[in-house]
Image (tube, rainbow, N blue to C red):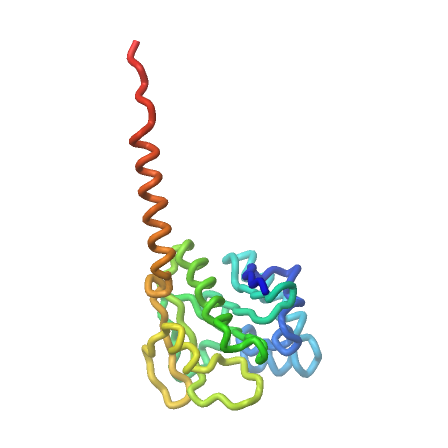
Length: 208
């Protein structure tokens, strides 16, 4: 069984679970969310949000596939592109952080490391772009229903630390250097070493 992670685009947005394609909990202010749900325009609003963030900021999500089956996703964006973030009692997010918003792995594929794989994919993308940290609002008391807020226990299990506690909606933070694995650090060091060696062993130019 092969696993692969790809960036979210308008072409593969339909691979998000049906509930998630129409969930605009993070993407719209609460009153606009209610209007979109009332008029049945939630999926269009979600697509418009993804399109806008891709255009103005860049990559804002990752999808994970098991073979050809989409089994999980994560979305993330700067806090100013996430209206709902202002409504939490533990707001505002730190100015140097990108906010993790939508996150879901199909129940039958959980506990297999896919959630951690998605977080690592986000960390890798944002580190390359010079971002210092990821923050998220966690749900400290999740129920069994589908929720648009990531359980705080999961975030803690993949390396996030609580930066502003709350009995229900703590804000958590992942410093991106801590999210990069030892293996990736070693690979990067080897690349630097090999690059240095290739330069130092270049044939000298003969003087005429």
